[in-house]
Image (cartoon, rainbow over all chains, first blue to last red; front, top):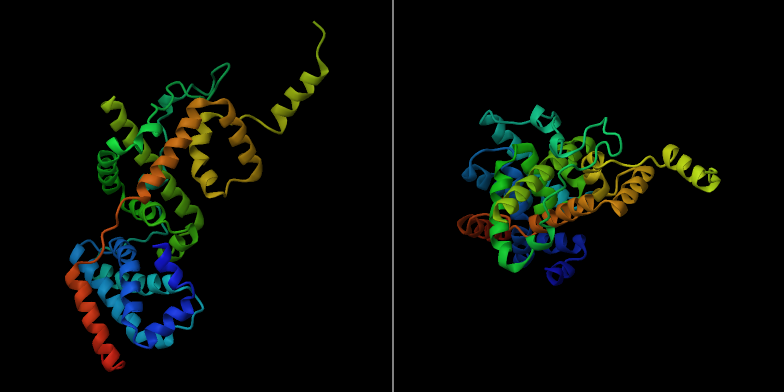
Amino acid sequence: MALIAAKHSSEAELIDRLRGGDEAAFTWLVDTYSPSLKRLALAFVSLDAVAEEVVQETWLAVLTGIGRFEGRSSVKTWLFKILTNRAKTRGAREKRTVLFSELEPEDRDGPAVSPERFLPPDHPSFPGHWSTPPHPWSAVAEQAAVQRETMEVLRRGLLSLPRSQRVVVTLRDVHGWPAHEVCAALELSEANQRVLLHRGRSRLRSILEIYFAEDA
Amino acid sequence: MAPNSDTDSLMHMDDDTLQEMACQELVEVITEYLDGTLPESDRVRFEAHLATCAGCREYLAQMQALIRLSGSLTGKSIEPATRDSLLRAFRRWKGAPTGL
């Protein structure tokens, strides 16, 4: 991946090649960005087939609009902007547009870890400290023998998250987007992005904790 | 027992400028810590707490493991048929850039 990316270290060069009809440049873009684009589409539309269409429309819009791309934003940002606009239109038609700018109660409320796991605030020596510390599993989670099953638990856990959290965790942690790109793509404030990521990750951690505790 | 002035001033500093972070607070600011957006004074308290708390060190290690594991989940891409149809569209576009 690093090698292929290095070949396109200059985005301007990549765009020039695309304008010049270089199929390899187009294929590289499609293969590199389609998984992220599809994830993002699924944040706005419910059906996999519709998300697929939205991604396809995005790439067609890239081809017809490549002449207008001025390189003021990164290619990635430009792609996500096109997709977001299209996906929102489709989502509106499905009456399923979700405004990410407004957090649901399930995203806003609730602690990362149950208060019962901590000593009470009026504890004489250690208020707010663990009464039941985390069941240790970090050392084993990535061992080859358990990783496959762990990944399956994680995959299911991710699907069980409220949608806004799922999308933010997916973009940040599965696809490795930086915070500011998630904010831009979802039109989300920095603070709400962080809340959604925090709630989502905290929930996933507790799902893994339960899994490893049962396993032990 | 005579009060030890060094200890006194140290304790005083601990109370005022470096109030210890409780585990329950740490788990709520961990995302900011990992993003590098935690204010400096809280970052110092966070790390001071970690140094003394095995439970929170494990908690942090779990979050870091979770993020690495998430990063190795494979994202679902588009269907091969969609990809093929895009490449066909590309070839048409290449032939007549305005008439896709």
